[in-house]
View 1 (tube, helix red, strand yellow):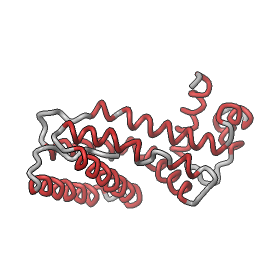
View 2 (spheres, rainbow, N blue to C red; view 1 turned 90 degrees about the vertical axis):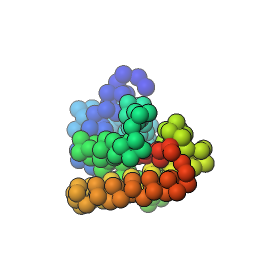
View 3 (tube, rainbow, N blue to C red; view 1 turned 180 degrees about the horizontal axis):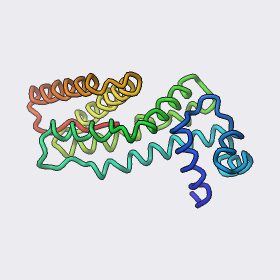
View 4 (tube, rainbow, N blue to C red; view 1 turned 120 degrees about the vertical axis):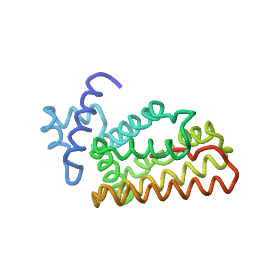
Length: 198
């Protein structure tokens, strides 16, 4: 992505993360960014093209963080899962999490760009999360299933946290999930960890 296009995308992400997408026109966004709607169309093709670019960039940034928070091989399974939850639910990420759910909701309303927005929304996380599980001793099939379930639980609890602000209640629910997961893996005789997921 060229320099000016990336600058506009970064600015658009900051703006929509703070203000949302609902009823946001391309002209209004362009004015807020100090450019023209024609410049945004030049770089992104359309309003929908810009929304897709925003989602892809936010997801790319989150996925890039996985390498930075790989669990310490000496960490316990529970500690690795708790460290991931602390990271993904950090308040500093809430604007991007809100943006994710807002765009996800729009895409599920069968907008013309649904397929582009939903493409990879789970699969992009599945492989890196499963790879973490495998690195911690899970067989491939278990790592993939655990990754998918972890993605669903984490996203559900993030939505709960954003909607209710009940940090204590959501953290307690995550701790319960971790304990259930640990117990299940112990019953299976697996010493590895369920992968974190986002």
